[in-house]
Length: 429
Figure 1 (cartoon, rainbow, N blue to C red):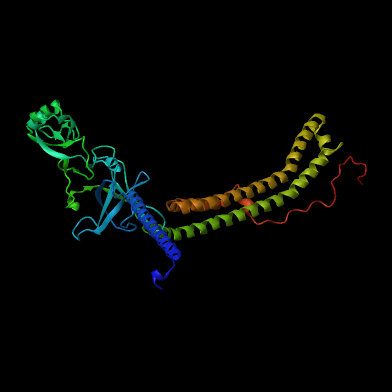
Figure 2: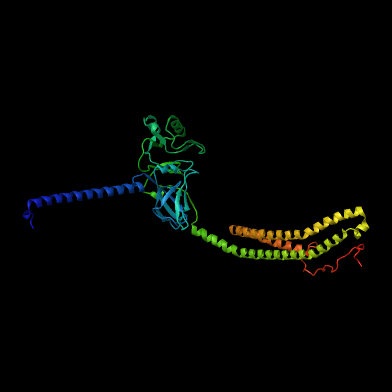
């Protein structure tokens, strides 16, 4: 149907709908452009696309657990990322070349010097992942500078009105090369110009401290003792090198641990056999002590019965020894009877104490087992201690004082069938 065939009301309504659809399309396009711009801005801020960066490099033994794009950490903060990882030449003393970038303002933490910054490759988890961490420098100079670098003469520096904004870009020593006269980044003033005149320096490099660029302008060179112009065209020769401290991967450490366990396992098994022998000797010792206690009980009963007969009125002891002696003898025998009566109790307590000692020995052996698992160097000392303990127990068995305690128990004399009676007893026939 042609548009002119429609009524004026339909044509008016259709034109309004077309305008609404057009506005909707324009609004959707504007929202799409705004969302894409916001995404680009967020990504740029997160990636640091518009933040000044400086490039460093280091060497590692292997690239295990490292990949391009991994973050670089400084004091727990992500301050950059790894830019490239590559192998070195076959004749090179180094194995792996790692290049990484550090964002501003964190470049100010990376310094040169003996106690300067270092690159550490440390373990991140138990799955072999490693992370590159840079440390904060404690002496030296910043590795990179973002101020304009230029070379001037002494006459130009003395006549320039901008001299107060300049800083030296190099160190200067005395004629012998032992004493440092001017440090890098020192201000260019009359005193420093006089020192340069004494050293015979006509031309020197300076920084303009008032002006700062978005890219590095100079990099420190340890051999020259000063800053050189940064040339990003040759990154492998003009970048600053951070010495590396590398820790082995978790897999390598686990392999070493398993090798140590395999080496220590035979010694541990022999130690358990020796401990079992010591426990068996302890069981034999307790059984012998129990037999000694049983054999002593009849003798103690007979002695108690005899002392009771001697203490009765009109007994042989009272008749032979007299009254005073009898009282003293009664006291002595009473103490002896108490001592003998408690002998069995003491022997029982001794056996119980020995049992507790064996429990403590078991605890010691368990603790010893834990110590052996923690430190395999103790195996030789513990083995010697166990052998000496066994020799001690065998020596005690052969000693004249304890020899009878380890004999086979024999039958004891039976108690008398008829009780002993005093000669003065009227019931005696």
